[in-house]
Each structure stands twice: as structure tokens, then as C-alpha cells.
Image (cartoon, rainbow, N blue to C red):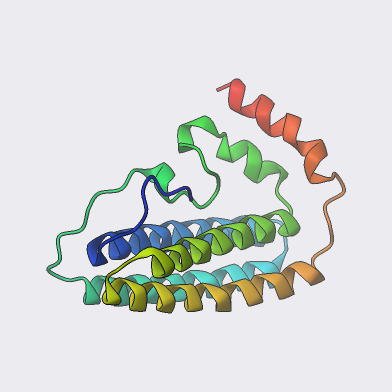
Length: 176
């Protein structure tokens, strides 16, 4: 979720928030399906709940930004799964290896990056409406962070440590 430039206007704030929420809703749905397929129903249920909240946020943001021309964003400016364009990562390979702990860790990192983006916007913008919206969005991310941290504490750690998996992920990206 590496923003190409700081958020300065209300339209940029809404555009980023909508992109992040849409990506989060889609990814939460994908993770829920994957985890259901593997019998991880409790974690899948959390991702279904997150997806519902993300969809509610999308509807609210769309309503509030209705009629406002929003700038277009490139996917890697808000990507939830990684910080690179999606064509550089073999998502099917990653999903095949994913455990509930992995899914929760990925989601937690994304929520924290989104919260950080909004906090940065609130701190750096001179526009009082951007500051207000950014603070509101950061607070919403805080709630999701708490849920994910709680679930992560309960989830068993993967058998292979993250640093041991990195060569596998790198190899899958280079063979596409």
C-alpha cells in the first residue's frame, strides 16, 4: 500500500479509501473461501465479517463522495496483498501454501498500512475535511486491527517460518 504521493485533497482521500476498501473486501472474500475449503471455519468467519464491514464502508464512501470527481489510482498504490503490481506475484501459489496464520498476518499488515496512510494524511494535510475523514478512516482500521490481532494470537503458527518461505515465493514469481 505504497502511495505514490501524499493525500492532499478530499477527492484523493476518498479515492484511496475506496480503492483500499474494495481491495480489502475482495481479498477478505478470497481468504474466507480458501479457509472454508480447508476447514478453517472460525478464521473464515472472521474474514466474512471483515468483508461485510468493508462492503458497508464502500457503500458509505460512495454515498459521501457521490458527484465528486475522484482521481484514478494504479493497483500497486493500494494493493492489499503486496506492494508490487499483481502480475509480479503468483497469488495462486501463495494461496496454496497459506495457513490461517498467514492469511491473518497478511490482513493485519494491510490494515496497519491503511491506518498508517490515513494517519499520515491527517497529519500532513492542510484541509480540515481531509483531516477529519482521514482520522475517521484510521479509527475504522483500528477496529479491524484489534479483531485480527486477537485472531492471530489464537491461530497456530505455520510449520515453516516466514523467512524460510521467502525463497518459495520468490521462485514462484520468477517462473510465471
